[in-house]
Amino acid sequence: MATLPALNYATDSARTEGEFKAAFEALLAGVKQIPGAAAPELALTISGGAITPPGSGGILVVDTEAAASTDDLTNIVMTNYPDNATILVRNANASRSVVLRHASTGSGQMFLERGARMVLDDTLKYILLARRGNDLYEVCRGPQVPSMLTVAKSSNFTITAADHGKVFLCTGNITVNFDPAANIGNGFVCGVVNVETTLLNVTTLRPNGFETIDGVTQFDLPLKNGTQIVCNGSAFYSTTGFLMPKLKTATFGATLSVDPNQGEYFEVSTLTGNVTTFNLNTSFNGRRVKIRFAQDATGGRTVAAPSGAKIAGSLATTALQVSHLDLIYVGGGVNRWEGAWTQIPL
Image (cartoon, rainbow, N blue to C red; front, side, top):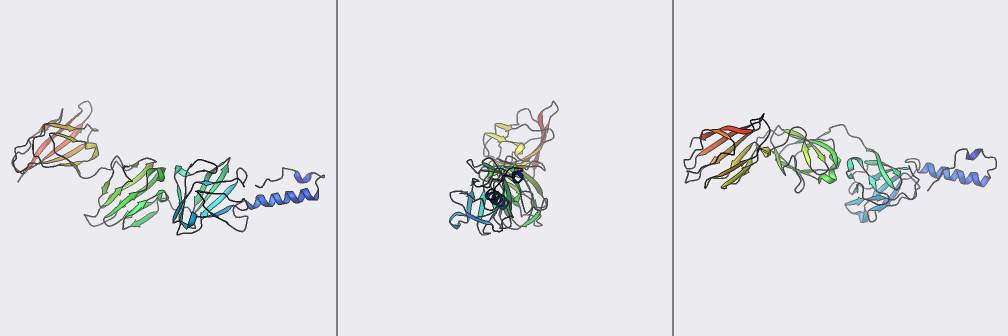
């Protein structure tokens, strides 16, 4: 580790030639630790998730362990660098990804922007880190990209932390998957737009596993629709209005439960008996919902009104006939669902 001479070191007339030589070497070593000041980049290979640079340069070129296609870099041990030193890091091979992990614990752990990992999957991607104590803190990364860069997509793809600030213009009937929210990180934002011209082609947004966007695990974005998605590190949300499926289904039963906060249009499976209890969640003032019911081949099935609801008309009871129940939630002290039945002709 380079330790620079103290201020006014050279003005002491008692200094010997040997002391001046040692001070000069220390100064030279310190300068070489500045990124770009030393001519060669330092080539390092990950071992057990960590690297320990020798301190003779400030630009680190990192490769995966055993030339793996991807490898986590959890710690950069800075034993050979003084406090406040900075290092510039890139990966060694564009065909292999070095994944910098946030706050992995231990000496040389890294604290990264938004608490999200950074993937070095291109030799032109860099990150500048500064040592504070035994930890490293991100200063900046590059190359910087234009705000809300647009990217055209026509086949299935996965959104990762590296896609922060991008807007995806989607064509075709494709699925947009998401990395786990914890990996994408708090504060992440991106846009997804279905720019299709074919009516039946949808862009399906699908978070990882059981994670959700606005409380749903999948959403189909119809043509000419778009949304901006943000992440809080555990779930995703739409900043352009909560996303709700255009169609939700509900299974017939003597007790029927529908949550209008999860969708605007519900189709109930064929009525093979009477609905004696109809649970309809309360909602916000002005919320509208349409619910479709269809009689079976026997007909004569009935549907009880939700508690407190005021509904005009009646359900069609003829065999195989369809009825729509259109409702609006009225707040302001009224606090009930109001609406009417529409019987669809056979």
